[in-house]
Length: 78
Image (cartoon, rainbow, N blue to C red; front, side, top):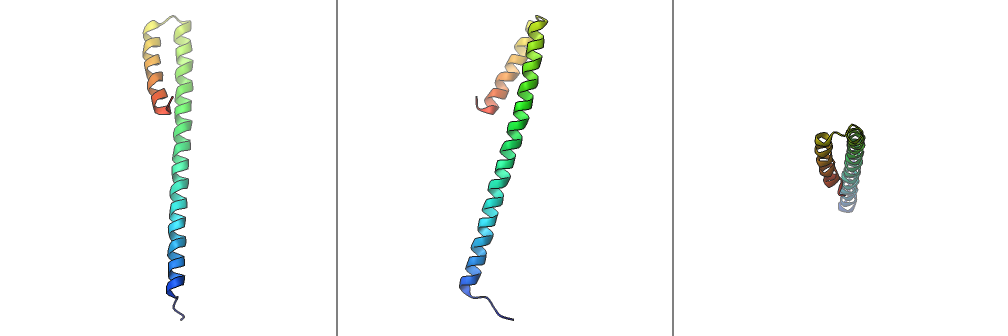
């Protein structure tokens, strides 16, 4: 059985490190995408509920929902 040279071992180790970096970046991107989708859905639901509160002239609900929307916007970075 032929043993690998030091150079070959270093190349293999570097390839493994690069794969780990790529996987980390891909996982991070997926996590960011899922978080954005979740916040977008939550925001849309709140906006619909705010519209309903306005239509019903429900000031208490409107203020509560508006506060929740501000919190979602903070998470969203807006």
